[in-house]
Amino acid sequence: MNKIDELIAQYVTAHAPTESWSAPSCGFSEIVIDTDGRWFHQKSEIKRASLVALFASVLSYDGTHYWLKTPAESCIVKVMAHPFVIEQWYFCEHASRLSLVPCIIAVDNIGREWPISSMFPLALERVNGVDIPFLRLNYGLTARVSRNVYYQWVEMLQEDKNGFYLMSAKTRFYLG
Image 1 (tube, rainbow, N blue to C red):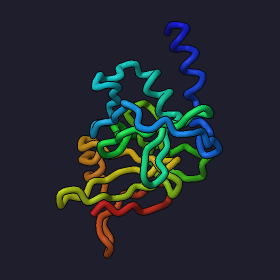
Image 2 (spheres, helix red, strand yellow):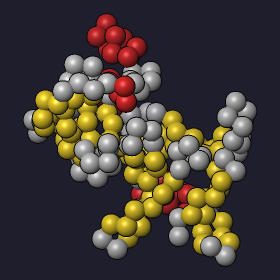
Image 3 (cartoon, rainbow, N blue to C red):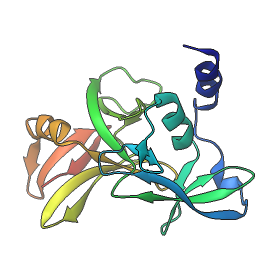
Image 4 (cartoon, helix red, strand yellow):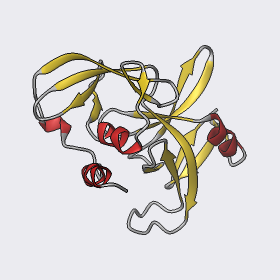
């Protein structure tokens, strides 16, 4: 890892406190996040993972617009669907500090781990007549569950009178 990547890495360990920043808007940025969670600037993909992680650490959604916020300025970002994609997962039996065991941990396209729980619940969105699962994250953000992960979860679904559900962190998340 080079020095610039090391400097960027130290700033992306947690999401910035964007809710406390009220900098003036610079209008629309030229950043677009596509349906696969890939970030583009002026139609060129941002391939540096550390730079995407840095931008993600200052991204938020206010119910109307996605914003990249800093203490100096706020810029609107165009997001085609969900800004992130759940690409992997694992089952955690030993998360005692969370008291939410057993728990499914979802891993997004920038490597962040999200415990599927009441804090980060699974939900469904209807798109073209099909229910698409996604995970609600912090700061109003969301991550679409990839088709591969969804099909893996389908094999684990349980059923009750309300439908099919995935159990994680002592909570039922209905997916059908």
